[in-house]
View: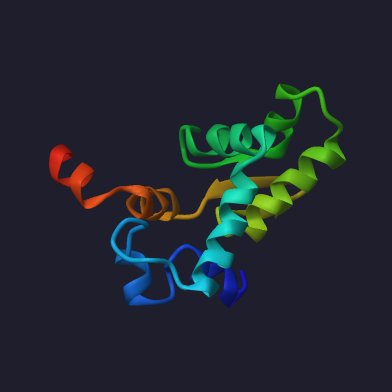
Length: 125
């Protein structure tokens, strides 16, 4: 995973992980980085793939189990998974002929924290 992908979700800097959308205006660079994540999530197929991976018992899923859920070709599914990886949302490992995917630890929590306003956080606390 590249350093740029780590910065996108606030894993590389202390201030990035704690700064929410409503706490201060975004710097231009941070907005560009986050736009890549939201662009990746803006496609229904990628959003479903992420949900299928994140909700899987054991935390990982084989691509062979993802592909049949869609009326798309295997190369198209692989392309969508590649975009999720490039956005820093998931990672994978090849085991024999199959590739297994999992959501990177803490990514969804950090993304959720970024979108949560201080007011909403106080209500849920």
